[in-house]
Image 1 (cartoon, one colour):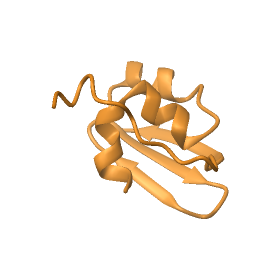
Image 2 (cartoon, helix red, strand yellow):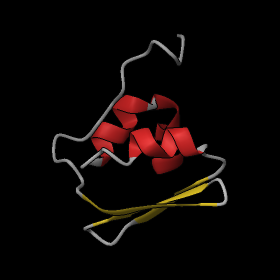
Image 3 (cartoon, helix red, strand yellow):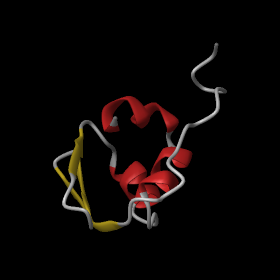
Image 4 (tube, helix red, strand yellow):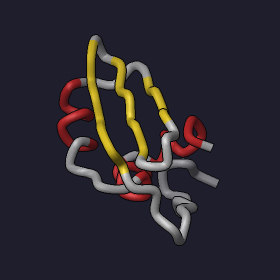
Length: 71
């Protein structure tokens, strides 16, 4: 199974994002549920793409390799 082409398993009930912050190659996502997720390293260009997301599902669709860090 190739991780780059395998399907992304996402929740049917999307988790809404409250804030996305990027500082010193570290990305912090704060969800409306209160859950806080941090990723490092994340480039500024990745941050710019991810910052358009409204839900965690959208972030996972952009970069499925992040799913292991969220669950």
